[in-house]
Length: 409
Image (cartoon, rainbow, N blue to C red):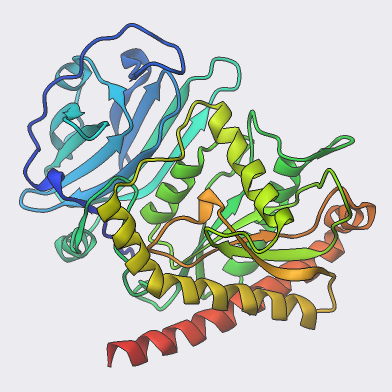
């Protein structure tokens, strides 16, 4: 049974600011300038199962997707995009009755509003970047849902700042399945760690695909990958994709290398503004560097009020993330697989900053260690690690659902 797959994320100004002024033309294509929509490569197309929204941009920018009711709309926010006159000139499929685009004044964000003829909800939302041109393409897929499902996706407390959501109880699918979002680290222009002919981006993509298949075989899990090809996905877009999928939990997969010292074995990290050790802090900085090089500002986007709301939201999600990390560490140990000397750590990983879903970052090993690299290349070892992770996720999901049931009482 299809369910609405968008976590409730509702912008305060989206309720009253739907008629937006056009953005000014800039004509500048540099990374430091306003991103521009490329009309010839953008459009809205009817598909056999809904609507495909394709937006070609002169450069990658953070974005988010959410829905509103009365009337039914899908909203896509960007930091920032000059849409020019495209919205008023592009052809619309039957499911879309109107398209408006412009700047949300004073917020530093641009907004695209799609008015719906019938209820449609975002199924996927992703960004890919061309390593040669630096251009980006945002793909959003809308699928038909019932009015009740659409209304449920659009409810919730207001979201006062882009990228900030209010924590909610985990949303199980109608048949009880859990939505797991797996985030293969790096990709595209960012290969991650490199050892010989092996790149971290390729290794973790293969591992993530296999983990997805292992989870699906349980019959209890719906799995979404933030990337399923060698493409660059900005860190904010990975979080947006997880929200669009209605994630019950988010696992970012890595296999880093260390320049100094010796690191080996699996490690699981949760979010903290204070790193548990110097190595964790260095890894967090390393993971953010690729987005900074792409011209994406990862800092300063939240005001004081948004920060307070995120802290409140994390009062719920932080202990759930720590419990997930503990379950993963325990399962890896029980499977007799190698763990790092300090298998559970904390650091300020940007990809873990979503306040509305339990999130962890898993280093399956360090490719700077010959034994770890040999393991990651070994299909039998990968299968053992994946079975351990599946067992941990299932155990955590059951315990988390029981805890949330008690909270609701």
